[in-house]
Length: 143
Ligand SMILES: [Zn+2]
Image 1 (cartoon, rainbow, N blue to C red):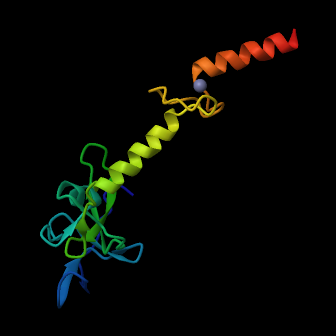
Image 2: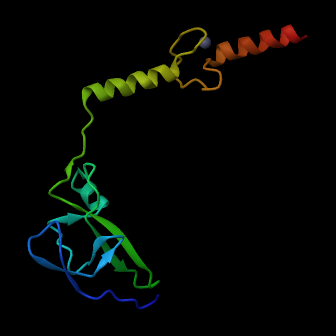
Image 3: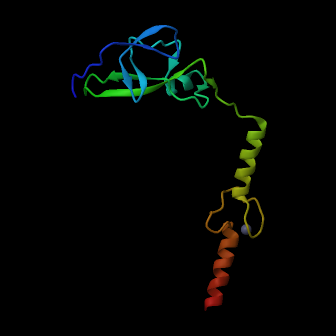
């Protein structure tokens, strides 16, 4: 659909009172072009992240579209309300501890119980020393 245009449509939108100009709807959401999307009120996921914000579980309230000039491809991006966004959760001490514990558990050998300072293979949960020992043991058993 090259050259497809979206006609101006007046609609009531969540980020402003009264009638606003939109470019119709897309997937049931108001469709906006760059020239009518209020940058201070709406942001894409990437734009939120750039402000250290996250959608906070809120669904997008509008869809932004643009056209890639060289390919002529029309792209769409979800727009979130900046007002309902929340700060990106910082790493708390408890989170760091949990992460360290999880990483430590991955380094502990299931046989000798030593922290081998490397992540032991999930298939055996053994460090290389124990793995080689059990391999040799199995080989001598088989022989
Ligand atoms: Zn071991």
